Image 1 (tube, rainbow, N blue to C red):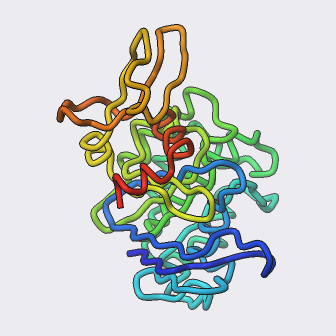
Image 2 (cartoon, rainbow, N blue to C red):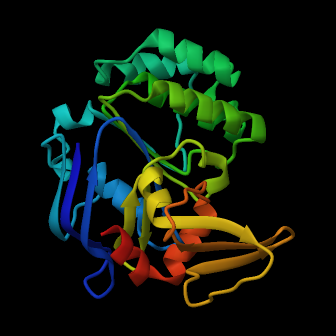
Length: 277
């Protein structure tokens, strides 16, 4: 679906955002894209969506070159940015203007999503709260049924019940023909949803793996005392003790903790790259 080889991009020649980036995204998955501020997550999403042009390398989506913005490519992708810019019209009017560009758009699905999210489809979109705006556009995005759906920080602005609704709706909408790519800082909100996990840092991809593969290679444990410091990739103190990440040497499977995984990747990037690449 999405194939990226030696991709480079920068807003200036002196300071690339990333370079030599390699990534493959396969259908039937909800990918979670993680990275600290400035790691290049949003820039990568915009390169995939064709909103930015790479300075080197190649990015293809279903055989299309994104930055050429050809009509066939555009109707197979929906990009939901973190910052919303919406016209002062109702959702019904929004659909009449934009749905025509998406041949697989489903009005029935849109109605179901809006009902699940409890969004008033008759109200002007600009009069809705940030959370309601987000839910309205997430509903439309899912109803387009594009093979590739990209969302940048979609849970920002959502309250706790809405985040639960979001996870439920996304889980029900994934198919074997679709890729959903979600960039997020809110890993706890999406921990049960995103899989595989992509971690970016220092202009490169440190990890791109499913949680089953991560659980094969790493153990996530809570201990009262940290021992064997040389084996510990990352440790974090909490009221329950110390959360640690260590190589899985005894083939015992533990639940993947995304926050610990992310911090371990930033703490020991070379070790993570060796384990997973």
